[in-house]
Image 1 (cartoon, one colour):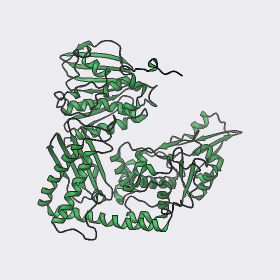
Image 2: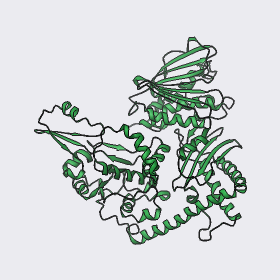
Image 3: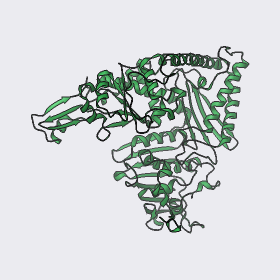
Length: 630
């Protein structure tokens, strides 16, 4: 086979984006789809950060259209000297073109790469751009990133601003159905991070509408996140300028073992942290250790505190603005600018050094909390070492009740966590032992929401989970060491099964959260009913079960036999495989976190020690329960 210059393909314009969309938006699933919306919203937010935009609106329309309006300056429409096209067309059709490369236009921006708008255009079947500017209303239309015509004046206006309306390409994305909740969560975040700017979402499909406006910014946000939890310290609030950086930081210590640090750069959520988060945490550790020594409050049995001691109960929001952020990847998950770590370290250190001198009682309260965390860490280490000495972790032997699969690499393998020995037996017999492992649990596992680490490590069921999965626990969890690609919770379709599922989700969210973040955790969806008439059998699955409608839709007569499955153990191995474990026909729900702060709150409410919060939640949500199957 020859290989010469004729075989080299040169992709022009936006062709590379359509050929390899994942390189630009991360994925073509629902996450990538909603990243498209955020790219356009981020452009409007950049106008706000520059001081020229007060209102941003997202409209979800019929036919999978979405529109983003802002009342900023409006994208320039004059001819660009280099491209000989209008600036609007240049921005929407040329990669790495935009005002964010010119510091006189934007001092800071989230859209560093200059590819956001053009990528959205390339991955949309249709886009319509309208600009209110210079008393005129300009418009240009595009098909799959290609202009349909030149920029036209379609009217006069007394407004300024930009409207981008687009419809994603169904040939590229796995789904083009926009989620109201996902977009609402992100707009609410933006409203907290941009005090004084109004964010509105309108869903024309359902007539839903919400507006977010927070004058108090991240101080208000942190107060709402902490909620009714018992505070150990007051809320700290820092707003300070450093070298090429503006820091807006609010944090507080709470009487819990959980931590919640949320970070942003130029209003872009850095879900994987980065140099700004590292600088913040390192500064905290350094000043707390130094202050403890200066007050002669060092416990000799503990010595210097470690990072995990000070992050227990730490709730923080870190928002910084810098001129040229360097993110890892187009999806902007982690900040890489090395100088930021040093600047944030200094800003936080100087603030707390003065604060602790003037508020010695506050520091003593904090010190008491951190000391308890350090003692718990030492006790947990001793418990872990005991576990290592006494059981299979040290020998590599897996739990005796685990029926492992034959494939030893995690790729393509599944671990089913099953309720009880009866269901475990059926699952073991019905599975494909090549790639499916079964771990039956005895009864309900420990509620780990407020349990001490040493107690968790001493619980046999939790211990079996940790050993079987293989990635470790809490701060020591390493997702590269997990033994299975999918971890699947499979419990009965009744109240007890739901409770066990919630206990397991609490454990995974608090102690193996990378499993959730990485998409490794699933919930099996077994059928609730079987309809049978003659040789015809149909299984009915939740969540929307209308038995009479199902009977009619599937063409059953009056003498249909109805079987109700309340327990997995009621199914024989073949039925369990056919309905719940066969990859070709089964139904599963991937566990994802759309709103980390709301998830954190719900776990505290539902699984925490405050009974009144749980009672209020039940009373407020009881009206949404139509059928309660006991």
